[in-house]
Length: 125
Image 1 (cartoon, rainbow, N blue to C red):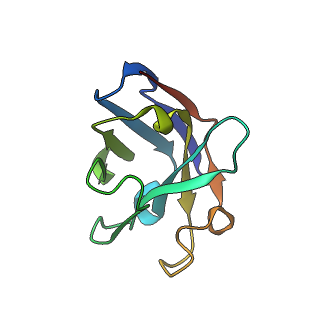
Image 2 (cartoon, rainbow, N blue to C red):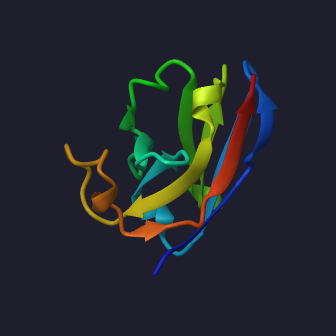
Image 3 (tube, one colour):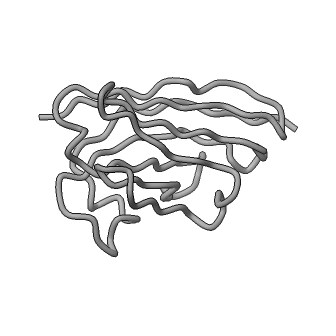
């Protein structure tokens, strides 16, 4: 069993930065981990994912070049560094762990087994 908790959300002006953290109990260091987000009235969407070793990373096109996912397995923590934030980045951000193998479905929420409660990110203009 893996328990996941996100933190680091908040209110920031457009162009600013935030770093989200995903702390986990259990063996998250053995699992691929992803970040998803859901804006009001919209579907949940994939943001980024990182393999258990950190060797393989995937980003949504909308965040490439602005967001960086990383992990520190010694601390059982995955990070999402968000730079050059835009108002359209406003959403609840969720961290999730995937106990399966990394594959072409890594961007699908259904692939993931453990989810956090989310942290709100609000970007003002």
